[in-house]
Length: 238
Image (cartoon, rainbow, N blue to C red; front, top):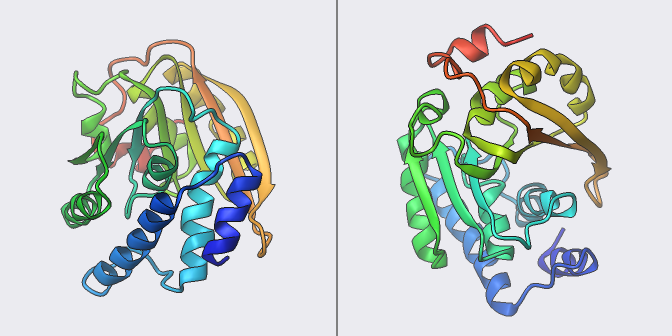
């Protein structure tokens, strides 16, 4: 997917991009590739791959959830900023907080935000299990997102405690999404979540399968969750 195709396909989805926003995506790509020579941020370096599999894939969340509204968003394990920073470029009014366990990625994200002149973004070097225990973050976000971080029963324990009551958790998955929904039934019940929608679609041009899983937070999460770092992954709530 080249830049013109990227812009045209988003236009077709009702997301018109200005020349300034297209410039931000170009700068995002250039900065990502520059830093990727010093640290492992992405295995994709070809411009067309980054525009399709990182930028377009990230923005695809907005095809199934309303990002036009005022939103406070937490992106758990965002790595090089996906999906929240491409969404921030498209929807500048949203407030984004990214938490990642590797400080070198946080250093990159701070430099990137400065390069792109992004406002209303915050970056936190922390384990998701510890971040969700902090009073200023717990159950304080309208929307929590995660893309390609862990299986859904693990993600629900890391992410749902951050979601406000009546807020949402959006998990971006590949072809295995529906299977993981079945695995996560117990964790959803424990953590106060309810499955709202599962959207299946394909990325354009390469036609790889994607799943968009939307979970609504109905009840507050018990204070014991998430458990201590590493436990959710070793002993998922299944």
